Length: 155
Image: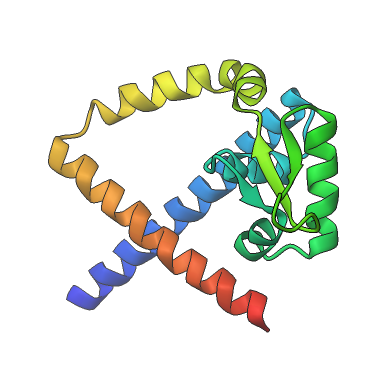
């Protein structure tokens, strides 16, 4: 009987996780379209915004994109004034990407305000311990997904 409960629990969790993942993708695609970006460009911009500056090579390593795909990404985001290229003083071949946080926030913040408010309201319905458990799950699951992506990118 115990095994059945575990299987049911795991099955329900997998279904909820898949639905969350799908809804997240659909929502980010809708936000990206509204911002005039592709879904992928929107997500990669979010990654780039986490750094005060980052090299094109580092973007390639983090994302698994080819250097050519990274160049196209940088071209598209630079054209929209969401980042700029700088060349390293030590090595002019090295391209440093500097996100334009102000322009990016001007574009994206209005599209996320309602989502952030609703998310804060939802989190307020959980105890501090429950929120810590959810956060621990997300951090651990992120590590697993990053390891999986790294492994797949190496093949």
